[in-house]
Length: 413
Image 1 (cartoon, rainbow, N blue to C red):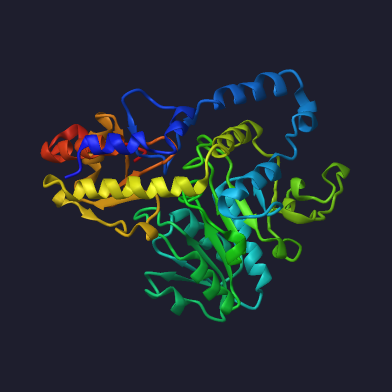
Image 2: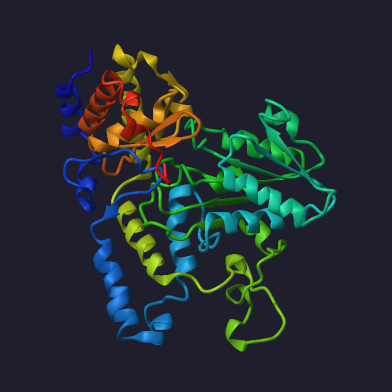
């Protein structure tokens, strides 16, 4: 049996323990929702205040140059690249995940004009599928999609010479299951297709090697495990080999070759900046900058090791609990193919999660029946995991689904 004392010993030897001190965390709360919104870095308020009070308030328009606002998208992109295995000049931090997926889809489709199929999966986060619908609708009825789980259960069988692009999340947002990025990228390339990886649920907790595996495009957000703040801008990776030969559909002035020449016609700039669109949210960008400062203090491989230990511990504790045997685990048990979350299916999952939140253990719920717990290695302790399972046991023991206040659905789950 795993005891709380065992978890305290694990905390005492945790090489990432000091990173927790870089975050503001509510007293007495165990936060298991970093896969939806990351915690606040302590340095962020002062950094954002500087951007507001000095750079905006005093320096005003001069800050586009003096504070290097204009180059923030690529500067931050280069810093983020070390976390996902991308050399400099291939990432810009900009816009939203949805917008960047749209850009990447159109770029891939334009690069394969003789192909009319996009491959994805029914388990994708819905915005990916919505963007595919929008992209295909704009191309006419000749285009179609194939979805893993709807049109076949083997991704290899869905990829052939008709496929222009494959869009997949490398971590399933409900189950936490990992796709084999290298294998699927090779499958797509062997068929002449391009791959777009959605990294929203892995950037900041899973080391990746986009350059080494030959990835074409990748997109992701910065407000989950990267802790850049609510609504913080997303990012897009475009391999160097594609930057000059592909076009993206949102030809805004920040992607122009000479934005301050104010020409009436559009000429795309060279390099990764051609995937920019319009003026970027500088105050939110400073949140990304501060978050990346935190990631400079440790090795992303250590974060992955701790993530696997945290999630594995949670599953072990649930498994040793008699009351928790009513839950159906839907996350992979093998560490190597599990992201940094653990999910269980339970028909009364929503009231259980709501009751746990009332007790100070914050997870989330995904319809129709998934209780989802995210484990951010930057600030979670092993004793937090032990106490979280105790709160889960308490909610199940009390059968909180029979209490009306826990069954009332909130607008955001």
